[in-house]
Each structure stands twice: as structure tokens, then as C-alpha cells.
Image (tube, rainbow, N blue to C red; front, side, top):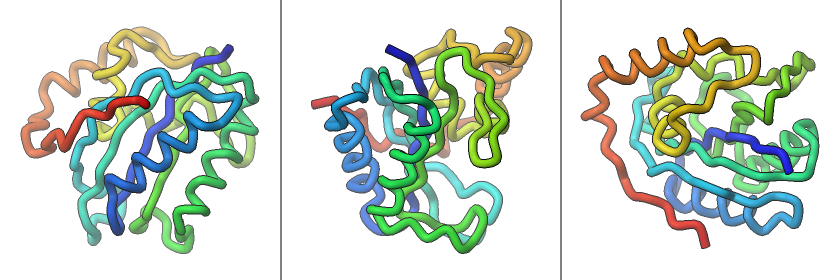
Length: 169
């Protein structure tokens, strides 16, 4: 079994319901097991800031499917949730990012592993470090992970309320 981490986000509609549905659907997949899910964090938008706040989380998965097929699965879940991809960094019902997959390093047209911006986005780092504080993505040295943890230590995340903890069913 391979280990993967995914980022989840939503800032349209019933944000919490979209995140729960995605986690439940992933866990129902015969080749995917959701091992851990962070708390849900309310975070400001990134990139295009003229939109509503997001709910964000990170989940750890065990899977037998390839990273490419996992990405297809994530995109199918986004599409089923009504994801509109017309605006870059625009509002979305559901956003699922494959952050890393085992020690794989990939540079494909539609898939980069580990995710190229994982260490820059506190809405990824905070929930990721909650469920797996010592994980260092493939190709990243410990200095990058230490830098990310320092960013967390100096960041005032108090304006990012934890909305709830998620219980895997």
C-alpha cells in the first residue's frame, strides 16, 4: 500500500458538506483507505482574494492505485461536486490537491509530485502538520521541512478557527 496526502478545500455552498462528502467517497473507494483527516480550518483565499473564506483540511490515504489514477479520482470527485475550473484560483465547491505520494517525484503535464507549493501555503501546512508533523515529502530536504515548521511557529493562525474535527467512519 502506498501513502498519499491530499489537500481539501471549499469556499462555495455548504463547504463542510462538500469536504465530508469527498472524504466519505474516498473512503468508500475499494482501493483507498482514509487513514487520518485533520481538523477543518477556515482560511482566507489564496491567489484571487476577492472571494469567500475556505474550509481547508488535509487527509492521509493508503492506496493501491497509481498517483495518476488517484489524481483522476480526485478530479472526478471535484467534477461531481460541481467544480468550475474557468477561473484560476477562483471560488470552488471542492478543491482536491494531491500533495505527495510515497517518495515519488513526478513532473507530468498535469501532475507534479510533491505538490510544488506545499511549503508556501499555510492552509496546507497547518492541517498537514496536525496529522503528520514529521513527514517530509520526497525530494525535499529536512531544511525545507524545518523552514515550513518555523513558518508555522511564527504565523498567527488564531484567525483560522478550527471548525471541527473530522471522525472517519
